Amino acid sequence: MRAVVQRVSSAYVRVNAETIGEIGPGLLVLLGVGEDDQQADAVYIREKIVNMRIFEDEAGKMNRSVLEIQGEVLIVSQFTLYGDCRKGRRPSFISAAPPERGEELYLSVAEEIKKHGLSVATGQFGAHMEVGLVNDGPVTILLDSKRQF
Image (cartoon, rainbow, N blue to C red; front, top):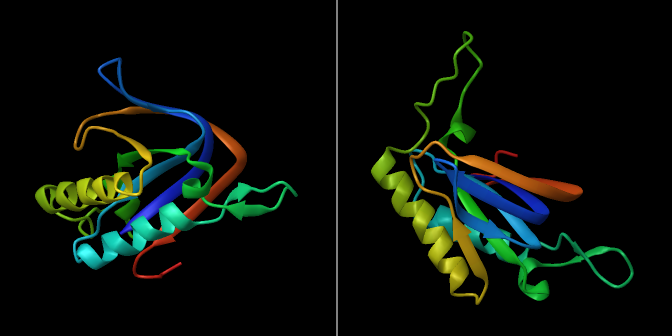
C-alpha cells in the first residue's frame, strides 16, 4: 500500500462539481492499494498516518501527530500511485489491486482511522475526482507498506 500524506490547512474532494469531502487542518492522504496488499498493509499505513509526528509543537519542531492535534483526515483513493513508467510512455497499472480489493482496503483504512476519534472524509472510489488543498509547510511524506522507500 502506498500513500502520499500532505499536511494541510484545508482540503476538499469534488465529484461532478459537488464537494463530497472537506477538512480543515489535518492530513490529505492519497492512497493506493497494490495487488499483493493485505490487511497487515492497511494496519501499517493507518498507524503511520495517525501517529506520524509532522505537526509543530510549541517550539516549532515537527513533534506532534494528527491524533495529538485532533486534526482531520481526507483520504482519496489513487490507484495511479502504482503506475509504472519504466517502459514506454504510458504507465502500466498491473501492480495496482483489482477494484474490489482496492476499495475494501481503502475503506478499511478510513474506518479504522475513525476509530481513533478523528474526523475522516473520503473521496468516491473509482470516480473522477477533483482534489484541492492548501499544503501547510509544505509538508509531503511518502509511505509504502512494503518499505520500498
